[in-house]
Length: 281
Image (cartoon, rainbow, N blue to C red):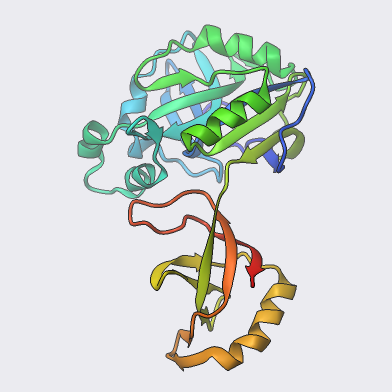
């Protein structure tokens, strides 16, 4: 398993926090899912969930302090800005080419470990989650470049705190869950802290589906996530609203409002990954 790209265990979505004492709950960090593979002899490698080697993008992670000869960790790479994970800053690091070393100093990232899959020749994926977490805490020495995600018993209380702080969400995991590679398991559940707003539909994209969204006349993004029935209903009505077009867009008088949910506002005040909720009449 060392220095071999793997497909990590994935999560199911839910709108509600699971109840009962069979779960632990962790912050869902707004970062970049990553597998950390470490060997005292071979060094450290980082792999994305799509099995791409991204080690060179984050040279600062090579200084992690791990009490192991060989270990594979699952976690999230995060860039902290003003006390919160900032996805835009992380993507700047991920996409950098010539300025990697400079950005490692000015916009550092850290690895937040939330699971351990392999240790010193032993496959740990068949152990219960609570047992894996105990091992993880013994292996990782927290520092500026690596931490272990805290676990909480009260998921509702944690999610309420997440909403107050404007964080991304939480992940609830069955305490007895085994680690299932390349599987989207109902034992791991993510509950996202969506924001909501009412916007206007200003244009329809001609090629790949998308609605251009406006807020009080200002462009705020594009949604591609609209159910088929609502797409058809709006397409019929939109013919009456057309005010012009070019090769890419059909422009509309923005008379139709819709409610969208989205993750956050970007630094340019755009909606991040907006999804249609309902028309607002």
